[in-house]
Amino acid sequence: MRPRRSAASLRYNKFMKRICITPFVQGTGGMASFRLKFEQGLKKRGIDVTYDLSANADAVLVIAGTRFLPSLNRARQRGIRIVQRLDGVNWVQRVRWTGPRYHVRAEYGNFMLSLIRARFADRVIYQSQFIRKWWEDWYGVAKAPASVIINGVDLNVYSPEGTNERPADMYRMLLLEGSLAGGLNAGLFHGVAVAEKLAEKYPIEVIVAGKVDEATQRSLQSKVPVKFLGTVAREQIPQLARSSHMMYCAEVNPPCPNSVIEALACGLPVIGFDSGSLKELVTEEAGCVVSYGTNPWKLETPNISALAASAGEVLEKQDQFRGSARKRAEDNFGLDQMVDSYLKVLLED
Image 1 (cartoon, rainbow, N blue to C red):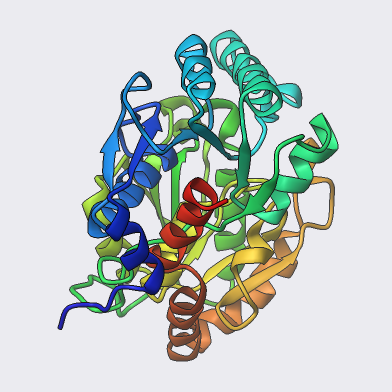
Image 2: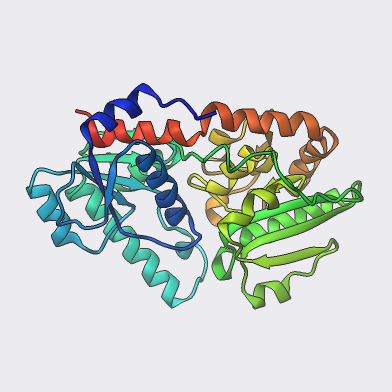
């Protein structure tokens, strides 16, 4: 049966709007994933999409930042509304050595994002309350009106329904991140430490999906089986989530991790430490989030034992937690809900 369109969808379709999305990002990361999902929602509503800042459009959505500032400024001068969607601030390079390339790119990225926010954006969308507070603490309150819109997923694609390869003789903990390489690998070591603590009571293995450099893999001496899948195609994620018993959120201070929302939509409970936006996404019925115990902003070792103790209940009550995880996604993280919220900011006064 065809899903019924919302009233907002019908209203926008009536006026045949066009949205310019910039930059045109591709790949498997969060920005590319958002662009694809958002375009899917726009096309469903009969809204045209362009990536050309010189084209006629009703609004421009800047996904984080763009280097095409003169074109962005000309669009603004033509009266086109500029909406900036902001993720978190790059910060790990200020705490530990991440290499010169990453450090320079991260600091340049912060400069460009803050410049667009201060001088070009007519509206700002933060992906979580945590991100909003972070930006306002570090760079001050934006002059432009601001909103918080949590990410969403296609609940038909990311679903508990479908094939899975969940093992029956042991528990499987999934780590799903774009990159856990180099200076970003702290959460990987924390996750494996949680699994090792759980292994004192439960047979468990760790599956890592995402970029992990060879040096990190070699340095990881684990008492539990750890399998590195590398970067996986987006189409593989639902089955991968259904084939696991729980997901560990490996990012420290996560701004608004798509991987967590995708896992919940697939009925996969999520565990992690209370840093970043994780508690905004994961309720106690859908997983477990415990106090970090130390200072996450210094990448200190968190309270491994506390999380392992709470995660045991997730393993023992799989049906209960899996059902609650899916319900959490259905109630809060549907793609239609996200797209309609964005369209209100992009197109309404």
